[in-house]
Amino acid sequence: MRICLLSYRGNPYCGGQGVYLYYLSKALANRGHQITILVGPPYPLEMSWAEVVRFPNHNFINKLGKSAIPKEKPFSVFKPFDFAELFLSRLGNNPEPFFFSLRAYQWLRQKALEGKKFDIVHDNQSLGYGLLLIKQLGVPVLSTVHHPLQIDRKEDLKQMQGFIARAKRSLYYPLVMQKIVAKRLNRIITV
Picture 1 (cartoon, helix red, strand yellow):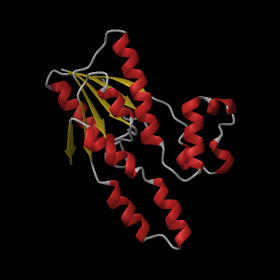
Picture 2: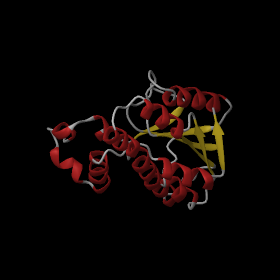
Picture 3: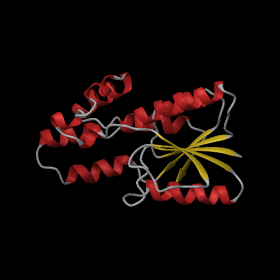
Picture 4: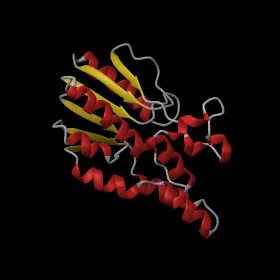
């Protein structure tokens, strides 16, 4: 099978997404599948068994104030997705999964136009609206959920002091998007 794995973060040392991506892709390749990985930063370790396509982003959600604008290329944030991602991150939202899924859709759509089609697309936790667009390309889409963000948010808010801090933090989680998308995918895997 031609399998496209999506992971908006690929960190091999922190969290589970990068570790899961690494071992899942290796196991699938060892079974004879052709693997393409679309991944955002922090990027995973080198994976010689797969074609790895690295999607850059500015990591706006982890940068405060003016530090969000790159000094060496300040106008690079004026690309439509980048600017919208910057704007939403300044409001306290975490737009990274959403925009990663749109970038993945654009890439997969272009590949489909070039005649490269996948048998399945396997999302690793983003559950972004772009996955619904990918389904419209005629390819089955499934997603792995490592931990429900509703539980993450609940635990996070327990540790926050004050109403305003809690209100701002609750905006960070893309719960509505993920709930809508999860119900419309071909399959969900929980680990």
